[in-house]
Image (cartoon, rainbow, N blue to C red; front, side, top):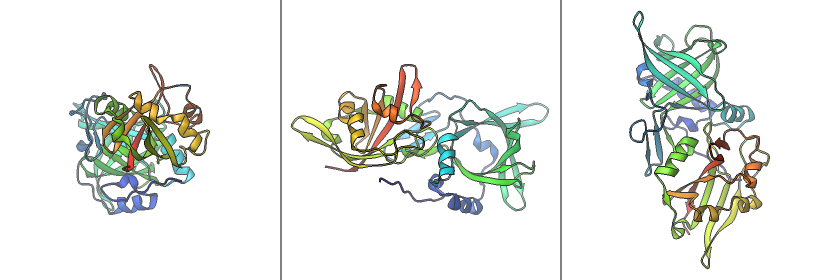
Length: 325
């Protein structure tokens, strides 16, 4: 099966396991105040203002909100968290004449309409030093709280607690990461659609030849590669040969992506119809919109991948080059 492995570090904590993330959190110091958390007031992608993409480093900067990351473990409990309860947080400055300036916020799971209101408060704790206390306002969310260490202007590591109304002293539940800057590995469906529409170009057949890995795009979590294939020419025809399959996301009807499913995806046809586009020589982005495609049936039960839009269902994905022909 295809596997995914990236180094865990303070620059890339979203690749850390539970144990490594807990250790990193303990070693890190919070370097910035709560005001650093403030996001753009606009949720719509405004290229160059609250969102940008670097095709050279394949990095997205997204100040529409802070994207949340659970640890990278692939045990069942963490998979349920990642795919079922992936989240983002937004923050803004709120002016109350009687109490002064506050940093208000909300936490949003991608898969629901929950808006968990909170406030970000600067604290200095004897045992943990400077941090930002996320205090939830309304029931049932006020049974929990978070403690953030902002280690970079675009990166924070947090710990979630069952609340005792005392910052950092509740019952620890898990650690998590918040980031405004992340790899295309973690792109959201909105990121993928914008890149597809505004940053990508038509693929030339000669430039796509070689070996590629395919990943489905989820708002909530890193999706491991589910397919390795090779594009090659036979006469004037573009063909895709199956090399290796991987596990489909948690909850899907089909356990693995096998040789039969590559025929269903029909990647050469997607390229020729401009439904797969080139970002650079090593990255392609695609949007599958044919509702009768067997891939959609295979994905039933797997949250966060197949999305209903105004024009019907769609499934965004990326292809990353593994080797040239």
